[in-house]
Length: 402
Image (cartoon, rainbow, N blue to C red; front, top):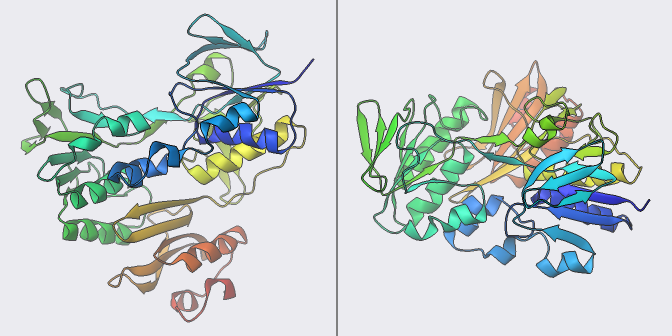
């Protein structure tokens, strides 16, 4: 029987899987099923250059639309999968059709976590996950617009940086005591808070939204006895992995679709890649789910290798990035708030690295406008180096020399 790979999900993990299959010489059929009207595109610019109007949709595409036809990749857009029949090896679609497979890849990504307080469905309350989301509110970010952002994570702060530069009056509401609370050390959180406040952003922490109010459209955001005027609201409170199809098909899920280090599920015909996966990471030393482009691309490549009978276990140091104002934050590893932090460089000059030690072991680096530290830190994390904190803080000593 001719090999037939079906990929559920038209994001970067799904797109990379299809691309890697063809690059590696796979001659069977490849079908991508996606619910958006676009070919696979890069999501990070959505809250950065695309929101700012500096990037077009086409510039974000991983490959031009014509590429998929040239590579004989069938792309079913605006299509919803309703069920996976593992016994018959068929994927059932909302329109009544079904697609057979010999190998199946779940690259279903995630969806935005929704607010469930009163008024959450008022017009003017927006989320940011895809191109159409941004197109739904981008033109409203004009000088004088009162923008309220719910959530002080990376998405919220990136949107704040773009909006305040466009002349909006920006308020960020974060329910936890610190912005970026789950991902950086308090010292880094304070740094970014001050950067945004200096730019004119009103950041309010320990502030939970209890309701949205307005007649016909949102006009106020209510936080207990505190009321903030709003012309536009953007909610960025995290994503939920799309595991329902896999779970209904009887596959194991636990904050993601459970896979091994070669992207394989317990069903030898089924693989998974990207934001939807719960996977082992021997560098970090445990299982985790990552919402990151590098992870989606690396897992897409690994899924293709495994499908073609050449499984290659992933040994990746997690890495991420965030652009805010003139600050390029590049991160390696995963830090915790109780890690020892060592600062290299100058926070005042906005050029420094925050290095994290756990039990003396170098576990993470968050480099602000310090590209060399970012690049060199990956090896220190992978090799579990135990640097002398005094030498680590010395900018005259390169990280690679530790």
